[in-house]
Image 1 (cartoon, one colour):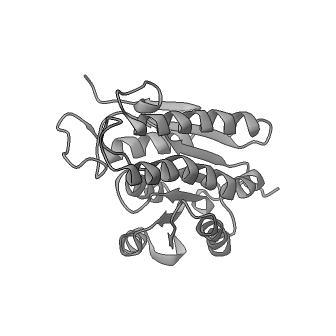
Image 2 (image 1 turned 90 degrees about the vertical axis):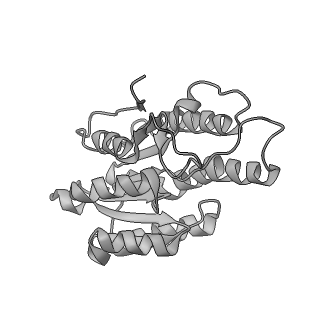
Image 3 (image 1 turned 135 degrees about the vertical axis):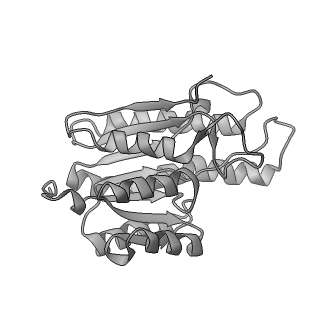
Length: 232
């Protein structure tokens, strides 16, 4: 079992869906708090720019990864360990939504949403848990208010209910391992997730601060769920 890092700047956080939105904001907040970061997403150009912004190869590693690919997920973790030697936290954040209504939207988009939001998150857990066990680390998953209450006609809500269940299932499986598990549950956020940006909403950094709050707790404290909503 790896020892806890003696220097805060030795800690390593892996984030999927890191090229924009909550993922990118969380990477910036974490880097500002001294974490080294592994940035994973499909957008190679955006990741490269963000990695450079956050300190280059010694502080930030960009890894192109389609979370629905098991090979990509395995390579993501292997590259993280090759670069930094450890993994202290993993944030399964990749996901997207779609139109409400079971007679609306593109059925192929439904398929991709289920694969990304549910299967992709599960693959991230499978890929990262061995390394997190070694460091007695921290696993975080992006669910949603929509993962607590059902939204009319929303398949996205269905996927986030699955992520909420996944987080609790992982917490129970990892009991006694020292690995903490936190569900991040945003309300409406002004993020690239939306085509028409909401006016009364949180911003990405509001959620990123919640992520850092969970990560900053002492090892014996597990913040199991964080529900973050805009006022009103």
